Each structure stands twice: as structure tokens, then as C-alpha cells.
Length: 384
Image (cartoon, rainbow, N blue to C red):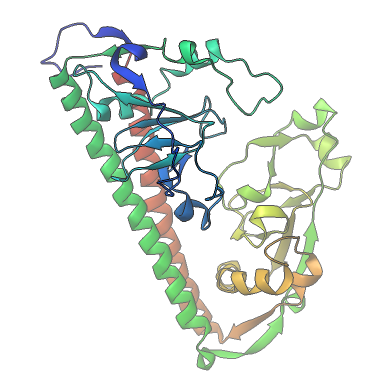
């Protein structure tokens, strides 16, 4: 896929032809600004990313010095960095990175750094990395020799075509960032509306414990070693999927009958009890089965009202019942929570307001998903 005004073939260059390895270290401890190379956020200040310094500031002599527009490769692999994270320093600051990282600097006028930045957001360099990697004892890190790394082939157009590609994709990336901001603003608005409503005692007749207005149950997990249990059509909802329209895994009727997994219906209230998702809550968008990490509340009260109240109380619930954010919630904890009860007509109006906001958020999130798919499509096809 190319712009029609360009017909010349792209030139094949080695990474070593257009860059040089940065070996300069913080020998005299002159610098103490430390970067982290995040697969999602790129190169960021370590203090901002972790909200504290991970590196020992008294022992930074061995760290590499990274200047603006230098590239940094982090060999740690993850779901967001299949062969490690490759990013450019766009912070306009000079700082340091761990000696576990590889740092290189563009030295050739044949390539624009921003073009290479965009190229490394595609997957066209992944095959080279997998071919040269020696995973060794640690399979969460790419173990790669420098000579092999810099032997990477790059397909490079003329500079004016590079600039055209940069301009085009930058517009898509900017649109994605503005869409993320729209979603963040909408989420802030929803939080503000929840606070306004649930702090207004005049709207409510009184309070009831959740255990008074519903039935509660959690599920279980079919035996993972039995493949027959996972070759069915019943969506198996995990704690990270309680607000999703689909699931990654399905179980069979046999798996359901031979385990503690329980069926939930579309419209049930689901709460995550365990781990990083503790306290997440949603109205189930599908019928399926749940495991032991999810609590289902089935009630005649409007589930949208209950879910928004629990979202409003989430931080207080975690602070009260989980020490330092660690640990698990339980059915007894959730049952003990008091929920305000509005008069029927007021409840309808409150639910309508929340439903409208949630529909708007869902639409904006779908738009973001389509923009990301568009970006992925162009990244993969522009560099073929």
C-alpha cells in the first residue's frame, strides 16, 4: 500500500547502516533522571510511571545515557510487546536507562527518526527478532547478541515518502489520543454525576443491605486437564470480562455439570472478587457461566442503579476491606454493604441518566476500537 505519486522501490538497509550503538555511561553519576521503556506508553520518566524511583540513585554509573531522539530497546516480552518494546525518546530530556536495555542513535540522512519510530510500531521486524533470539532459562526476555540485533533488515523509502507516511499516520495517532481523552472526560463526568446523586440524601427514602434485596452466588472452574469440558458453546466469563460482550473461553454442558461453575443471565450484576480486578462491577451483557472469582447478584431492583452505586463506593470498599489493596473480597463483604433506596419515580430518572451516559461511553469506546484497528491495518500494509 503506497501513495500513488511514489513508484520507486524501497531500499533495503541494515540497522547497522543507519544507526550507531550508544555506549556512553553515567560514569561520574552526573545524571539522576531515569527512564522506563513501557510497551504501551513508550519512554517515560520512571518516577511518573511507577510513582517512585525503582533504580538506586546512588549507583547509576553503569546506566546508559539516552538523549532526545535516541531509540531504546527493552528485551522484556509481554502481551503488549511480543518481541520486546522498541521506542524513541520523545521526552526532550536527557536521562538514563538500565544497562539491560539497548540504546542506538540514527546516524544516516537516509532515514527520519519518526519514520523508524512508526516502523517499530508495526510487526514487520518481529520475525527477525524471533529468528535471532536465544530465550535461555528466562522465557520472558529476548536474549539477543548485538551483532544479530544490528543485522536487522529495514525497507526504507526516499525521504519525501517517509515524511508523507509520518504525516499520514501521525494524524491517525493524534485522532486516537483525542478519542482517549474524550473517553477519560466522559468517565470523569460519570464519576461526578455519581457523587452528586449518591451524596444527596434528599433523593433517598432510606438504606437496605444488599443481602435484603437479592440472591448471591459465585461459580467454579471445570477441571482444566479435561479437554471435553472446554469444547462447548457456553461462554465462560472471567473477572476481567464482566463488562464484555464476549469471552475468550467456552465450556461444555458436561464441564458445567461436573464443576461448581454457575450460569448467569444477561442483566445480572457481576462483581470481581479476586486479584487486580477486585471490586470491578458490571451488568452482564451475555448469558454464560462464571468461576469462583466472580459473585453474581440477582435482584428485582434495577441492576444499573446497583452497579453505579457500587462503582461510586468501589474505592471505599477496597480501602475498608483490602489491606493495601491486597487480598480478596467475599460474598459476605458484598452482602453487608448498605445501598440507598430512592422512591420509584426518582429511581427511574436516575437509571435513565446513568443508562444514557453508559450508552455514550460504549459508543465512544467502540469508535476508539475502530480507530485502533485502522491504525493496525495501515501499519501492517504500509511496510509490506
